[in-house]
Amino acid sequence: MKKLLTLSLLGLAVAAASSAQARDYDNVRIGVDVPYEPMEFRTAEGELTGFDIDLGNELCDRMGVTCEWVEQAWDGIIPGLMSRNYDAIMSSMTINEERRAQVLFSDPYITMPSAWFAASDLGISEATKETLEGMTIGVQRGTLQDNYVTDNFSDVAEISRYSTADDMVLDMAAERLDIVFLDFPIGQSTLLESDEAEYVVVGERISEPKEYFGDGFGIAFRQRDEALAEKFNEALAEVQEDGTYDEIYARYFGEEDAE
Amino acid sequence: MLDISTWFNDLLAGNTIFTADTLGYYWEGLVTTTQLVFLSLVAGLIIAVPLAIMRSSKHKWISLPIYFYTYVFRGTPLLIQLYIIYYGVVFIDGIQDTFLWPVLREAFYPALIAFTLNTAAYTTEIFRGAIKATAQGEIEAARAYGMSPRLMMRRIILPSAFRRALPAYGNEVIFMLHASAIASVVTLMDLTGAARFVYARYYAPFEAFLFVAAIYLCLTFAILFFFRYLEKKLLAHLNP
Image (cartoon, rainbow over all chains, first blue to last red; front, side, top):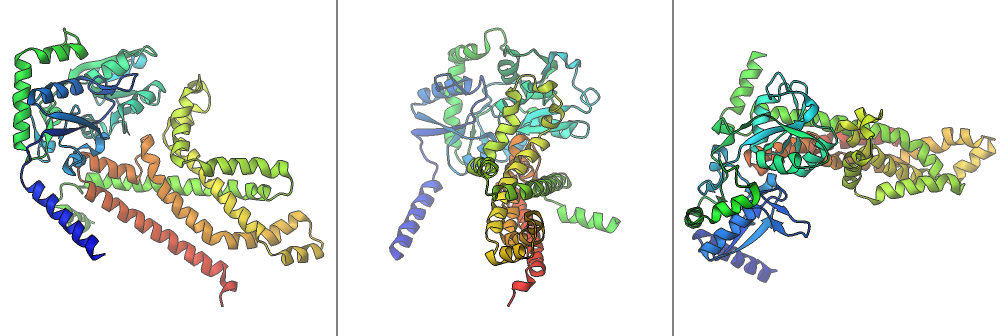
């Protein structure tokens, strides 16, 4: 018993010592919430792919480190970073003030508007308090879309919160939801390009106010890992400089939509 | 009244997580959880009594179907049952046009149906055990009085079986309360759903979940207290 205690104390001491200094990473584990097509998803063969995955792997190559992707559900993704299940988050995470208080962000690597999606026969052309009155709105729990909808529409509409975007799309098809609020490319690939039913974008794409929609997507790190964030920023700048970034972008979003 | 609201505001002053808003979510969650658990237990109990009687029947063709039902619902996780009833039904073609849709459309009723069927299965087996454990002497005495099987069931077997089943049933009620925590996977804002919402919004797992755990503890305590009172009253004749 005593031996066990000594051993575990020793283990604790080692763990404390290694976490006290900022590590030099040669193996970076990156947390990601799958699926979120086309940012991160699995192909029919079960292979992890998507814009975040391709860009992340490219960045790791440039930095000369090996990267390992760790799957984590969205609502636990920041706590998972804090508890060292992985060292970075690259999972369509919007940079905003609330999150900045918790994590350190890289430079934004893509900006992405949100949009309302509904069946084409819903018959509204704009999402406002008046038009959404009495409707059921679907959002993914804990996303900035959730925050925006909760703060602006919870008094007039019912809000259903889902663990994954897939469950939400399923309930949209089941006609349990009237309208959903999603990152635009996600809605585009899951709803607009589905052939089951007719969906449309309601109103303009939304990326204001900044208080909710932030400054684009960033890679998140623990606050003290400044050196690691700096390395990612340098690699990102390099990739954007030499055109590799555009090539990856075109792979998932086509050429024309580069805003 | 004004005093209370200023006291309340002072209490919450400087607290970024437990604002009046989030407490509102917890309150909503408490209401949903209580409704869901209470209604499913009442409905489950009503279903379970006749099923338990049928389950203890001597005739195989009566008892076997009931056994099959309890076996399936006790043999599969409640979460799976909930998924099938909530997400599964939408794959039935044309379900949206039937009279069932207004019920199945809301998340509340599929959850209620799943919970009711589940607790009814467990309760049936609890009651069956209690019915089987009826002392042979009591049954013989009832027969000697010339009671019909129906009257004997009503006057002799069921009342004593209910009493015997009480402690086990109290456990089932508590299990049901805790099992209801999965309701949030089908978008219901129950207590756990509220905690998950607060957790995801403020990235505060400890605060969000410890608070909700405390609420569950209080509910469990109330249930325990109620059943202890019932046992004291109904099982008084067994006390030394």
